[in-house]
Length: 358
Image (cartoon, rainbow, N blue to C red):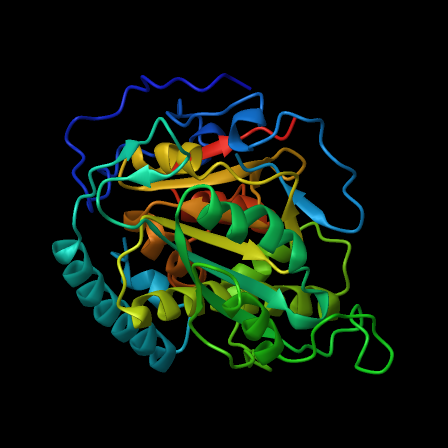
């Protein structure tokens, strides 16, 4: 682990809204391919939070220590109808993204010495997408350490997308048996809407794919060396597809809002934070380069933690859409053995700032 260097040697040719050239892989994927990466890491998480007190017990909550389609051969892996659908979605989304980039304003930011608010005559706005299962949702921690501090300390307004399913998985108890706080997305939306500076973009339950289309090559490689039965492995891969679909639905809600955002955040249902988040520090890190994803370290799996991440506006398309697109259209690196490593390779054209959890 190396300490964060504010003078990271970035290419001077990168412009806002443009990806680095293909010979620059600003992601920890460079480590697995024998390339020296230019990503930044930090040893201490204190500066990402308002308090310097020691971390509280994790309880039952997973805590976050936050502070090219150019080969027809790849498309032959999936049915032609699916390939056509993916390419259509790509062309539509790319066109909309180009329009958004051309209309985006550059914010002039200053930090007031008398308060924690960021001020330049414009209100900062965050897009937050909560994904996962409604029965597992831990909301109060997100309210206490994300939404309230963002607004009360930094004057940030948050638009929230709820991509939550009411699943029948064995790990989740059904209503009447399970212990959960919310039984409808409307309940969640009502509680969040009552908070200052929070706007909920949707109130509908997410309907996941019952039998999602699987890329056979992806399944075969992910099954190599696995001790799971073929049936269990197939279900695991289907869950990966559902997870990637959820990310794409986040992007749909973001685009549908028609708003411009200063920071993008996705957080999983059962994940929380140790302390109130420092918006100024997070925004500073994600603003250093246009294509930036800020995530926590995932040392046990050698990849990117899938519990959540912050992203710059220009990196939002990649963060939300590339996992599902790449799973169907890109060849897997032979070294990819888990979802965390797959995400790491998927985000190879972004600057992935990994924060050490140690």
